[in-house]
Image (cartoon, rainbow, N blue to C red):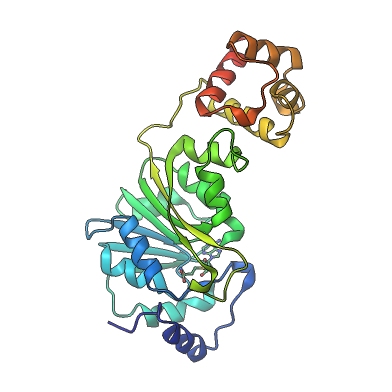
Length: 287
Ligand code: SAM
């Protein structure tokens, strides 16, 4: 086994050996704190029975821990300059497959098929500039992904786990909670990375539900209602919904739907939970 890259001296040695220049536009902040990958492996409950998809292996810091704990690791990295480095730092493992590519452009069904069809666990220290699109792509990809352990900005993790009445509650909380049970496993300080990011981070655990949390008749319509409600979160629901053209609904029709649900028409969207939005969407679609 090579020295662990989570040792800052080893990361510095590899960076210097390959004259690697960090690319900010790819969100490159590499881990230099062994406690973090250890905690992630534990939070994800990895065993040799697991197939893991890692997004953005960087120089392979977390990959080393994943390869030791899991049966097989497939890692997708966008930056071509990292491929020779990964070949070096992961040369001691025969259960890691690195693919060069952009995870947002990757055909996930084909990749999952190549990985044996699932179930798979996703582990990533995410590039923060594309956190939401990556999470939503993974969550909506079908049943093969059972669990995700993701490093995200602390503020994003708090938004994802929050509920009605909280300032942090929003469309992303509902979008994620529809598919998964979210939990914050651990807070991670900027000093655990090289270079240090300007914000604190959290390890977010997303346990995929067997079925979505609610079953509205038209999930797309429900998500359009959610979008409308939080685009103008200070407005009452009837005003926010009627102000969002794609829904094509009048203020009066939205107010009537709320009244028929036994709810006050002055409610704001931020007070409704997922069940509430599902019921509201069904009621509007019925009328
Ligand atoms: N896993 C490493 C670690 O923990 O030290 C690196 C994490 S770094 C925060 C994010 C990684 O994602 C970088 O290696 C970056 O090049 C890669 N990345 C950025 N955008 C990507 C994309 N669209 N698809 C795949 N990888 C991407």
